[in-house]
Image (cartoon, rainbow, N blue to C red; front, side):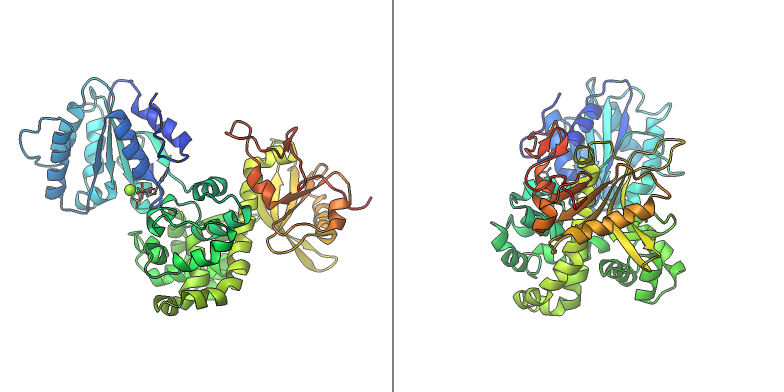
Length: 512
Ligand SMILES: Nc1ncnc2c1ncn2[C@@H]1O[C@H](COP(=O)(O)OP(=O)(O)OP(=O)(O)O)[C@@H](O)[C@H]1O
Ligand SMILES: [Mg+2]
């Protein structure tokens, strides 16, 4: 088993999947596809894999077919393969590659594969043919990994009628680090700082390194200064990154429309109708852009858990949210170097419009990953939803709704209903609202063991803390970052007999 090099942070599951693929001794060539948005660390990981296994790493460039073939031949020669004449075409090149692999599994990575497909559209069919019956792959030990970030190309590679569909033995999506790994990657020990950072740069590894010249806040007090030195600084590559993210997706031909859609979602218009009226288009006109943005993993669509058929959209890349909420409206002043002034004026919008909703999604991730420990029972779907309270003619928004895993033939069981606050101390009235919601839901769901959960970054009132009734749980920011799963390198001290304990998250009551 190849050990993961120390410079590769996290990615343990990805590493073992890649190593298993690379070391597979089953006869015949094998194909894997690695994709993921830009700057998530695909190349970093695959380069580490080929270095560790003595494989071939070929990073394609945007070149003509002839030039690419020449570069590929040179890469093979460096690998020790005898190439005695220039390649005529990709059939020639892939055949030689497959037949020269030797008798031990050889990892071959073709990175930036979409560049090659652009100049040689038949390349996927060539690979398909050579990996198929009668192709040069039959007696080959090559473990071929195709990698790329243009989601429109990589996503299509294995879809529908695509030639490579059904050929791949490995399909891997490299995602941003989760919120807790991101905090570790940034060295952010303070949970508040960790949430603020994650609200700006999410879990994209390159945003911690090259794009900010390795500049991380030294502590919570340094956050404001860090924002103005990096993301709001026109000399920092991070400044233009959100714009590039869109521009890089080849399918996006009308950036103005796409930016408007993202801007609408970032501004809190999360439904199809809401987005349409915000940007002044018909709902039907949005179907295509919303699909494209979803395919590029820039937005996600989630159902209202209580009103099926109603969907809400969320921007998944925090940097885009930050750009749309804070940067785009002030772009010219920022370019003129007025970062500190702009940040002073926009900080309020950042907390209200960016951090608040972002913290809700962090709490949902927490419930998804740690809900079993937190609630002491297996968890299934986690989402958010709205219910109508006809008696007061109002609506109750539930930020974290946790269901038990669906069991056939049984009614749906709600494990927990939760409300999230970033800047507000939570008190008994929040629990009262949750209790009201639980009562309303009792007619359609099993709410017998439903835990009412208050997630607050600002803390809880003394009254709420001192009341003592099981069935209510308080979750602090510290809990969200402290609790680790059993089996991880460090088991958080907050785990007590499979439940959250400790100062911040005791089951408390609120009156009889
Ligand atoms: N697991 C990791 N540990 C430490 N640093 C990482 C890790 N993954 C990525 N990085 C950092 O992020 C940078 C960008 O990663 P990389 O170039 O591999 O991304 P990519 O997914 O190939 O992006 P692109 O699609 O733009 O080619 C790396 O140069 C490295 O500094
Ligand atoms: Mg790369």
